[in-house]
Amino acid sequence: MLKKSNLVLWGVVLFVAWNALILFFLWTRPPSLSEHGHLTEEVIRLAQDAEVELERQKDLLQQIYRYSALWSRRKAKEARLHPPVVAASAQLSTAAPSSRHSQISPDAVLPVLVIACDRSTVRRCLDKLLHYRPSQERFPIIVSQDCGHDETARVIASYGDAIMHIKQPNLSDIPVPTDHRKFQGYYKIARHYHWALSQVFRTFQYQAAIVVEDDLEVAPDFFEYFQAAFPLLLADPTLWCISAWNDNGKEQMVDAAHPELLYRTDFFPGLGWLLLSDLWDELEPKWPKAFWDDWMRQPEQRQGRSCIRPEVSRTMTFGRKGVSHGQFFDQHLKFIKLNDHFVPFAQMDLSYLKKDEYDRSFLDQVYGAPELRVEELQGNQRRDLGTVRVQYTTRDSFKAFAKALGVMDDLKSGVPRAGYRGIVSFLYRGRRVYLAPPSDWTGYDPSWS
Image 1 (tube, rainbow, N blue to C red):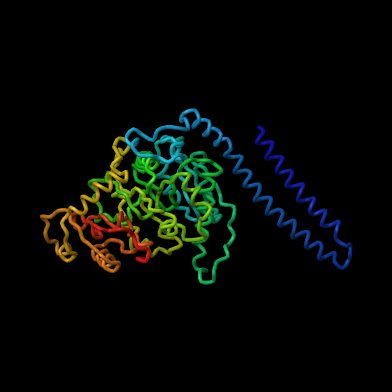
Image 2: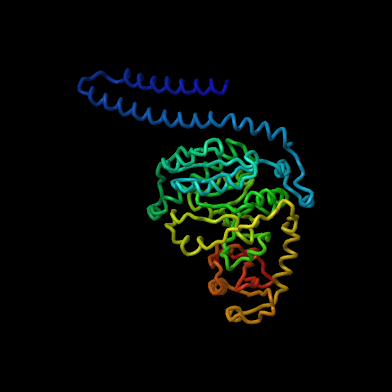
């Protein structure tokens, strides 16, 4: 009741203050008849501006009031069910979490932040999230909408209390360099991400969040995957995200018979990813004006950390429409396979993904595999060898071999998509192939871009 009274009081203060400004303006103007018409026009213009601003403030206040009760109930339930300091997990207890991570329970609430704009097809995304969601309390869904698109807003609102709908208040154009005018959309996306993530971690005060976009469809075990991998993110400081996406996840390039396979990757995948609040503490002050995902892939942000990614993607995109105008979708994204088998990750020991153990095992597999030339692979030769390795030594040789084998050949700050320590793992004509640098690899060269 007190909160409601405060909101009413705030609205009254705004109204009185604005009218006081108008009166002050009128009293301080000289009463010249020649200026009377001009004065009237100014007052009307000011009044119209005031009406627009008051409507905006009213909308924000209504959002705050609408969800304040939900936040209070969530915080009370978290305090009752999840004490603030809990060990990460028995399976992962050998890792040394940071002091901040140790304050987060592995059972913490994991909201799903859906970044939306003007796609009314967001319904497909939300329907699958709600269908597979095991718990509304553990996985609340927050849809953050930019663009002010009425039809999309009506679709989101139709879900009622099943989700939380928040709206980016700043819909203005962004001043951009002349040569970036065609990239205005990327600037708005970065601004929206900044606002939405700040709402999740600052206003709602969640400790972690899963981020998806409005054109993603999720797999049946989407929530199971993130729930099981979350303690690993808490326990291993060499990780900075859990991703649902495999950049080389086309159907013919993944082992669909083993959807339980997980990997470390030095490439930030995005497209369905989990981050902690302390990572946002680190990134928020320097958040870029545009191209946020490529910015995340720079060494200054990554700082040598990795993400977990699956063999078979737990998200797929159905959104051809977007700022890239569908070119990348037609060439690649529409061929990514979405996992359709539920994997009980929560019953599995994922400690093999901790850096020291993973590096030892994975590097033994890669460099223990016999080396084969690309031509031999393309000719389907030496089938008796099973898993094989193709070695590259330069940027040009990587790009040539990747293109010949159907792997994505672009590099960001020297890191190949889905790569770990320069190694890209995939299937080629039914057998495992590691496209890898020499065993004495010492690190990425950012000039390989």
